[in-house]
Every structure is written in structure tokens, then in C-alpha cells.
Length: 351
Image (cartoon, rainbow, N blue to C red; front, side):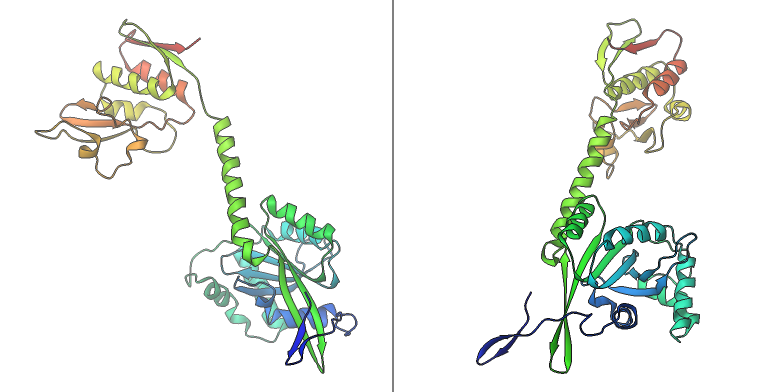
């Protein structure tokens, strides 16, 4: 993007230059300036510097230019190049992986050392981090699982931008920020622009990524669903054929209760996965037909067998059976069969 001097005579191009031509050093000048104005390269995200030149890990000689924290609790790796960004994305990925296990107490210690190196009050290091995050004065804190990456450089090659776009589509959060200096008289102006993702489409790209992740999770869950069918025989009657696992569990439980097994006994004996309780119950209402809405106001009907013909009435109470059974259908069905009188109910996988 060109920079122009706007005058009554028109637009006059401002000559572009490079940091190298200006004699700007990467660490002594560029990094030193940005550490006190870090939000210049993190537009739209409030950020604080934890430390600089961080390399507190075994077997690695390289150091993170600026290790930061954003207001949402993500650690942020910021890498700077005064010229082109060759291989920055690969280097930053290694740093993000190595820093991903950082604990809160380690971040406090790193920030304390940074404050000392800058001649600042180190005693408030922990309080400063907690205040920045809006956290309580005491109590445990943990950072987000995702480490964000910011690459700031004079220029980005197609090779780098293509890689970053692909990595972001895979769920990472990498931003490319371009810094272009311009010489204007005795001044040096720097145009700083986030080019990936473009700010105006960043929210849309995040929404697309989250939708894709949700679809992937749904596909995985769908592929692991139990579509087994069962044939159930109750008290020697005509078998109920090809019941799904919900239908099997409802009919087994109803048969057990009809044959004298109490709901409390069933709830105590069924090895169900963690989740909602086996039953919800309420006193049998007087003068009206029991319905799920009348007996269990506020309960989510979709998580229970809530039809009028599915509710169970026993000893002056109305029971609704959960329809959330996880993956332990056979184990659970076997437990109910054992509770009922011998030969009362039998079931088998449908052919």
C-alpha cells in the first residue's frame, strides 16, 4: 500500500524505504519500540508483554522475541523481522509448541525477571497479570489451550502467507502484520497493517473455522453412534421387533416395574454412564391426567421419555425415564433382566 502526502496540488507519493536502509536494528530498535507499544501489532486484541527473548527450555538455543498474554488468557508468541519473513511461520510453530505447557506460576516468574531487567517493580508481577486478566486476587489460574502467534515483518512471501492461511484453516490462530517504513523529512513513519486475516473478514473466518470444527465433531459423533436393533419378548407375548436401544430400555424398565421392581432399585442397580439421573419423579397430580409438562415444569422434555404413554405411574408417583443411555446398552439391559423374575423378559440382537 502506497502512502501519499495530500496537498491542494494533489497526492504526492511518500518514498518508501526499508528498516535496513534506515539502520534500524531488529532487537535494539524495532523490538525495543514494540515492547512498549505492543498493541500496534495486535490490533483488536488487548495484549500485555510478559517477557522478551524468552528461551527457558532445555535443548533449545533460540528465543521468543516477545512472549505476551492477551486479555482472553491466550499466550501469544510474537516474532519480528525487520526484512522479509522467510521461515518465520515454522520457527514460531516450534515456539508455540514449546510454550504451550507454561503454567501460571512460570509466567509470573518470567514476568518478574522481565520487570527486573527493565528496572521496574517486580513485586507486582503477579498482581499485574491478574489485573490484566480481570482475575481474582487469589486462586488458581490457567491459560487457554490455544497459543496465538503474531508474525510482524517488512514483507511476507507467497510461500509464507499460503502456509499461514492453510494453518489457520486447520484451527491455528496466526496473524501476519506488515510493517512498512516511510521517510518524511526528519521523521520516520511506519505503516502497520494486519494482512492475515484481514480485519474486516476475521470474524467471518473464525465463524467458518468454528462451523467446520463443529461439523467434524458431529461427523465423528455420528460415526460412533450405536444403531443396533433388538428383539424383546415380555412375559411370553408376541416379541417387540427391531427396537432401537432407547425403545429397548423403555420397555425393559416398564416391564421390570410391572413385575414388582421399584424405580429406586432400578436406579441403584443400573450401571449407567454419568449424566442425568435414571428417573425424575413427582407426586401424582389430583384431578388431572399426568403429563410431563404438568409434573416436571422446567425440565427439558427432549432428554426424557416424556410422552403421555411413556410416563410411569407407581405408588402415587409419576416417573419419567431418561432417554440418554450412552454406549453401555447391553450391560444395562442385562442388569435390568437380572432384576426381574426369571423368564419374565428376554431380548436378543435383531437379525
